[in-house]
Length: 170
Length: 83
Image (cartoon, rainbow over all chains, first blue to last red; front, side, top):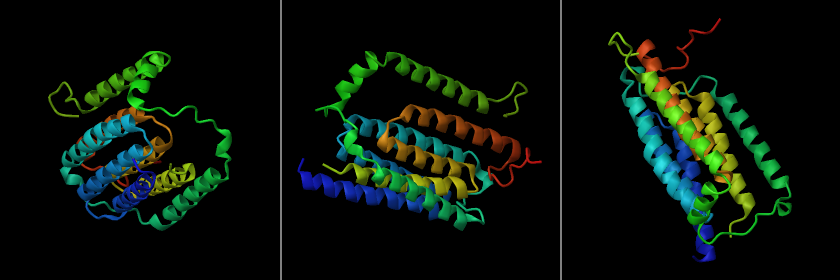
């Protein structure tokens, strides 16, 4: 890939991601907010590709754009009488100031830190093969713990929405 | 190559937007959307997608369970444990 093309793509994708994230905060309908959230996830997947993290980009599309957004749409559609409006609390302005301040602090610390000291190690040609080797050789225990965590979360989600013994749901 | 600082600034902006959404929405699914935005911004710097998927599944199941009990997932009306 051309170097300038990657940089232009990074900024376009960054604008798409941040713009649709802002739309999540401002749009009125909750369904529209979920759809803008999906656009923001797609933008983040594109950002991964510009950062040469191709495997993470594919996983981002599979998990966030595929699974989590469908889960959210189902949660909204299964709760019909709770209203579809994406309303904010009355004291949204001070929350915005607080969030802006925290973002400014993070940006300040990120720009102030001397990242040249951090050694990035060797850059990989393709990430998928390296990630596969790393997951099955040195990081096999964290990998298995993560799968146990996913099984427990799945069982917990099923248990929470399972009909009780009397036949009545909940 | 893209400068590391630019990635950090984008991730920080995404994090603060997610924080605003999570703190200001009345709907429980809206709050969860803000949390997902924040997790995404952290994932841009570090990678931890497994935890995000597990958390989303459990939180949305909780939202559906609460809706069955109270017919509402407006967090202003979920004040059963408020003293």
